[in-house]
Length: 473
Image (cartoon, rainbow, N blue to C red; front, side, top):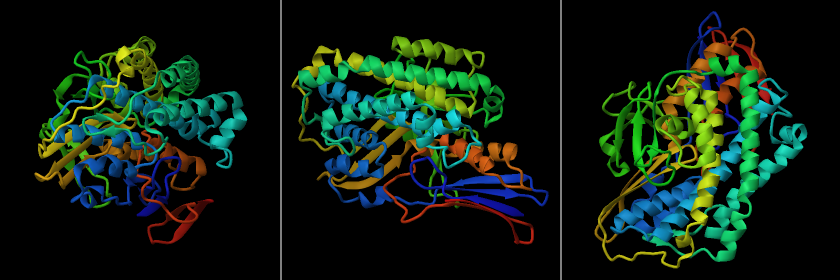
C-alpha cells in the first residue's frame, strides 16, 4: 500500500492535511481529510460568566469572528430570557451582512479565484492573489474594495474590523448615526456591480469547463440551512430546514431544538466531528451546508437581484438540488448579492436609527442556544449555566463541521478521478486541495503554525520505499 500526504492544504483558513492511499497498481483506494489541530473552546470556557462568551468565542476564528460573536450574543439573549428590540435585531443582522460580504468576496476572488482565472495547472508561483492582480488588475481592485466594504460595515458598528465589540445580552451597545448609515448606503450599488461581474466570470468559466464541473466531486446528498417561514433563504434568524437528495423536505425545526435532530460522530483520524440527521442515521443522514446547501434547501430568495440568479440556480439540474461541488462558488456569489441587497433593506428601515437598542433582564434561565448562518454554513452555540450565570457546559457545532463528511467525500472522488499514482504532478495536488477549498472550510485560525509551511508530497511503494517526492516551498 502506497500513501500520499498533502500537508498543509493551502488557501483555506486553518491547517489540515490529506492522505491518499494507493494500491500496488498506483490507483486510489481511500482518501482522508484530516483536521489535526485541537481548539478546546468548549472545555476551557467552563467556569466563565455567560456574557464573556460574546468576546471569548470570536477568538475561535479571525476570518469569521462576527459569526461567533453574534451566535454567542443570541445564546446570551436566551440565557436571560429576552428578545432584543427590533433596532438591535436589525443592527446585528446588518453586521452579519457585512461578515457575509467580506468573507464571500475574499473567498471567491482571492482564494478560489486563482484556480478559475489562472487554471488548476498554472505555476503555483503565480497561482495566487498576486497572479490574479496581474491577470485581471481592474477586477482585482474591485474585489479588494468589496471585501473592504464588508469590513467597513463591521467597523462602523463595532469599532473594529476583526473581533468587534457590539452585541450584548439583550441587544447592542450603540446605535447607528445617520451619517454612518448614509455612507454605507452610497456604496452598495458599486459593490453589487462587482459581484455581478464575478458571477459573469464564473458562468463563463463554467461554460468553457463544463466537463470539469460535471465530473469534479458531483454526488447526491441531503442539504440543510436556515429559511424564513415561507421557505426563503435566511442568513441570520430562521428555522432549520433539511431536505433530501431530491430536494424534498425531511425536517424543519426551531434551531434551539437541534439536539433532537442532529447527532455527531467521532472518527479517530480527525479532531473535527461528523454531524448527521439522526432520523436517517449515519452515514445516510449526512448533509451539506453553506452556500450550496442553503440554496438547495431554500425555495427562493426575498430580494430581487439575488432571486433572478436563484431562478437560474433552480433550473440547473432540472429542479433537483445542484450536486456539483464547484457550484459552491456560484452559490457564494448569489448569496453575496443577497447580503448587499439585504443590507440596503435594513439601512432603509426607519427603526435602524432608533436608540431603543437593549432589553434588560435580571433572569438567568440556565440554558441558551444561538444559531445563524455563518458564511460557511449553519453555526450553533449552546451554553448551560448555574444559577449565578457561570458556564457549566458548552456545545459548538461550527459550520465547517457539518461539511466534514462532504469534504472527505469530495477529496476521495477527486483523488480517484485525477491522481495518477505512477507520477505525481503539482496540478494533481492542487485539484485535490480545490475539492476542499470549494467548501471554504474554516479550521480555526486561533491555532497557528510556526515558521515555514512548505507542502511536501511523498509517494511510497508497497515495500515502504520512497519512489517520488514533490515539494512546494
